[in-house]
Image 1 (cartoon, helix red, strand yellow):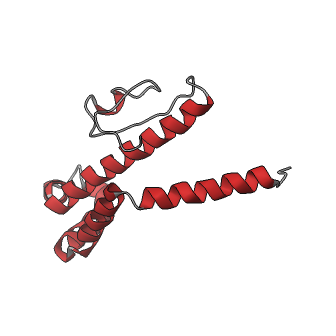
Image 2 (cartoon, helix red, strand yellow):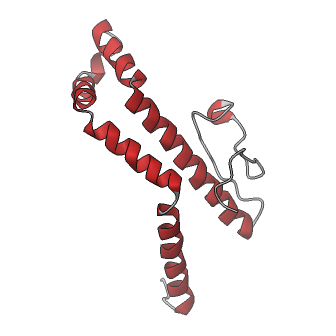
Image 3 (cartoon, one colour):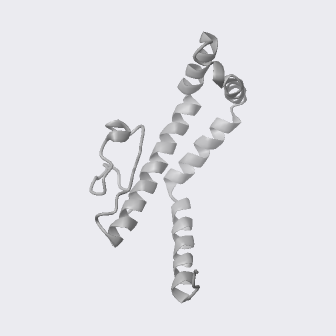
Length: 135
């Protein structure tokens, strides 16, 4: 049974504060702008809808495979994927810092598809990235 006391309330308040601080980061603002650009591109959204409706046929129909490639190569899609990767990197870095305070033995899986080395690249608790989001 969860016991609510001052420490739990303080932890909840600190979590809210951390969340608000994270949402103010420039990389979050960039992500939100790119997400909006992706969502507001009507031609791209029509393509995405058609692709979703025909997802089962991607391997059998060359025109659906071509549509999939076109959607993935669209600038709005590419920019959104980069922003998503940056967000995941920042969140992973934050999780590593929090986990490191508790124990250096806590593993944080970064699973970043666009990071050098793919998702099997440097992903253990001691790995460092070139970009630092949190001091």
